[in-house]
View 1 (cartoon, rainbow, N blue to C red):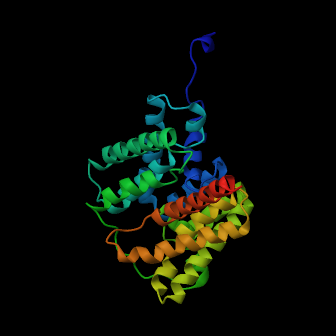
View 2: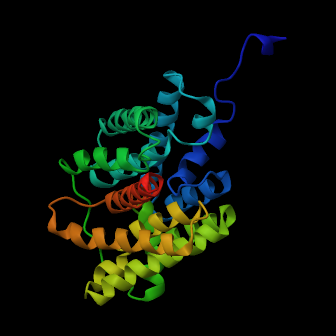
Length: 286
């Protein structure tokens, strides 16, 4: 009787939140999102509260502002909140202002994402740009804890290269995320692993062994691989995106700020910009 007068604007919160975790990987899959959430819970339990709070704050902001329900349900307004919640939890010591800060930053990421999609999304996809911009602001007042001794080995580095997408440096985290990727999109998952391997290989060739074993050269390459392989692009395009992301990652050490996922975002923008220029040139040619 009451269904005629009450319509839940977000009928499945669990699905929406899990999709927010999977959208960090550019995929919509609650099962993949669950694997990502488990990766955080099992390997960095101190970060899971921030991740969930960030996802929820992004979703609730989108709901309160009346953003498209299908987009909310797909997790498009939550994934930047997931990342900013993890980052704030990782670099700032616990205090009573940490939860409100996560809520405010994640809510702002939702607003930025919406405005980006509304005004320029057809030209340049936002990807994780809202997280990068807000993350740089966070890093002005905090810094990540130094990493302890890590197990050296190609497989460890490869797994960490995927795990570092969520700022996780345990191989188990990477394996769980890879599992989620294979559940959601096996072809894209394979390319994510290839991207992480290429990034780690470049780090080794440039004598940056610690960065290779920590996966610090793998996660942007893995994200670039996901961005193109999931769209069915030709392998050459995906390999080119990986190469651009790794090159930008290598150059970033000349800058005073951490790259976060900026090399991935910029690599995708450069690739899409190049495609647009080529299409325009072909259209203009007689």
